[in-house]
Every structure is written in C-alpha cells, then in structure tokens.
Length: 111
Image (cartoon, helix red, strand yellow):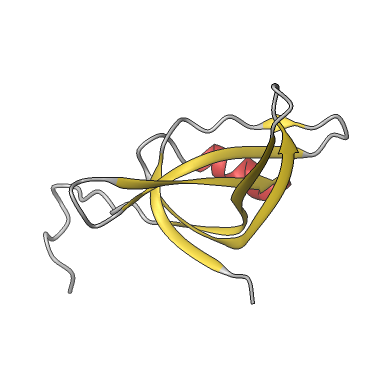
C-alpha cells in the first residue's frame, strides 16, 4: 500500500506550469513541524491538471494545506552527469486546514 496524508504549510507562492503536452503541473513544497527545536521537514509535492489548478487558486505561501497522495521516487542525471534520486508526493486530493477567521459578530466559541 502506498498512501500518504500530510498537513503542512505552503513554503512558497504556488506557480502553475504547463508541460509541452499541455498538462498543468504544480510543483511545491510543504513544511511540516518536526516536533523538536522549531525545525521542520520540507516535503516536495507535485499536483497535476485540475488538482494543480485548484491548489494554485486557493492556497498561498504560509497557509496550511492537507494533502493525500502517493510517494514516488525517480532517478535522473544532474547537470554534472551524476545520478540522483528524487522522492516526492504526487497529490491526489487536498483539504483546507486554515482556521476560519471570526468576525466581531460571531460567537468566540463553538456551540
């Protein structure tokens, strides 16, 4: 089974790109609190087509996002000809995790 669910903050403002074949792709990273010494894990993520467009539309740098997807690894050659491996999460779905802002008219607690 290959399934991952994470909640983190967008590290940068999302920028959607398009492949030569016309597919929309969004590569982004989320920061996840490591639980020690105010450090974080930075997780690379990729979303495609409609998922990519919606994440780029609704999320901004610093906002919390929940993602579900699979972990993949791929091998490539860098500019110096060295073999490298990239590991990333391919996002299948996402959730909004920011707290709802309360207006002065709203109750300060849940009923």
